[in-house]
Length: 181
Image (cartoon, rainbow, N blue to C red):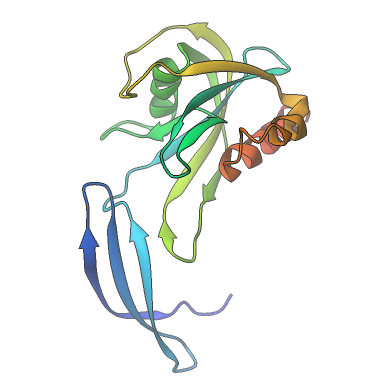
């Protein structure tokens, strides 16, 4: 592995309620200097994305409004961990808020980055099994539609054009591999 660049200076260029843009002045081991900008959440909030399996073949998706693409998207339940909450606690809470189920068994699959060249954000991917009914009030502006889908037909889901989020698609394939092992 090459030696990581040395941080010479960093500053915040802009900040909103949710994000900040940081400027990073770096020097690489070969003497080259560069300025990078990155988008951060302004904290170390952990994020979770959960693959909830209602049975051996059926994953529960949610349909919710996605402001970035200004349409409704099918995807997996997700959210950030609250202060003091473990990843497993956050995942179980998000399941209860978004699909009305908790999980007796949660398995951490991996961590995903979104766009590591300019976005400081990681998402923890979990599989939820042995679900039970429990509904908590969430922070969504409207009730989310829960859509059962056969996890063996991920390509069919993608073909609908309603599921375009790369994290959800990759998590489904990884979960399928885990469930079939």
